[in-house]
Length: 497
Image (cartoon, rainbow, N blue to C red; front, top):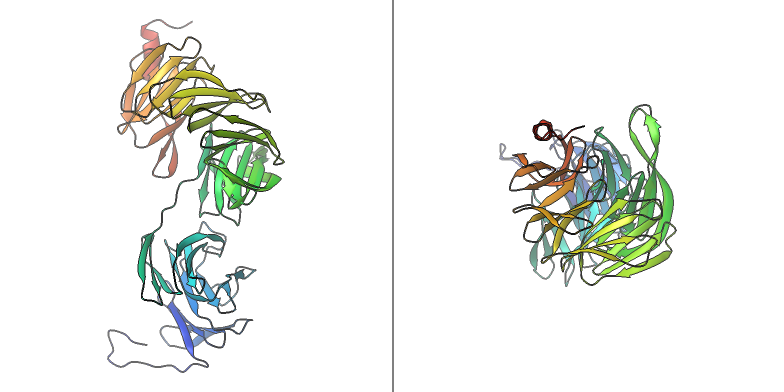
């Protein structure tokens, strides 16, 4: 052991050859992996062995790493990951107790590993010539890099998502990892992926949330009324929200599993399956609760996915496919251009209407039980965002050039337009109340009166009553906005009964 304050180097005797070592996060303890398959946990101040872990395989412990404590994960404390040449990795707490029941099979001899992003993720490299990304508790998330020879070491740059790897042939490479946002919104329900393997559902109005641990890579999520769909790696799970609990918490229960792989772009999708949840009845405590009602064990390839009361709608380029919650394909629509935006606007269960914006500027409407698409409008540029008013009399569209336009849905007459916008939403309760965002401002417009502005960063994604839902930097916020200006505009024109 070497320190900057002392010139002498202290040495400690071990029972076997040391092949790996790591400090814990606060530097009060370190771990040494041995050739005989044991791990020695030692105090940094005295050097005394605190705990010895004997791995069942007896193979050399070639890689160990400590992961920082995280309160939003299954095990919130600091983790010790231990990988041996029995091609397994196991997880322990600082007292040497195994915290993840099942050891993870790696399929290769590990040579190095490291936690990054404050202990949120784990990267492991080895004899398979790959650098593989895992969750902090060992769920496989994907391959970071495929090299030509054994990868001998991997290190993460502190406080970043950059990973550097070194190979036995002298190759040195650096990779910057990017994590996309996977989320879904319906009225005041917002669902998003966290830690890559979990889904959080928020009730934006009541400021309540529930966390669903999927133990698999979440690929897509979608929420509609009391239903929640989650697409995993090879299946779909459908959840239903449970009854209202006394403590007000949300709760969802699994009601269906669809064992099928879907390729799509929007939904709650894990690495190889989709989970669909349904919200239970409102609980007395106000908390959200979802129960798993369906598991669809099938891999779906898609770019957008939405869930309806009885169906899943998957979008891939120009094609829309409709599946029921058992994973059976019901119908398919082939549109004339790439699909840029899709939104379920409601309707009777099994007969919902869906608005679609295309890259060629067309706005179409389909019904889940009808094989024909209806073209509502044709713009000159691609559709970026669209919404329909409470009584479905008016359309609001933001095109690729950032122009927000409103149209009469029946006559197709242009009613209003505003430049430099990025998103638009009609009020869910009032037919003539509209809000749009852009340029660091939120604008609220009533009827044909001038709009009122206030500062706001991000994209407006929903408008219900006096609450505006805004997405900014991967975070969804509910903001109350004053509507007194709009009220005075109506009063000045004596537009009241």
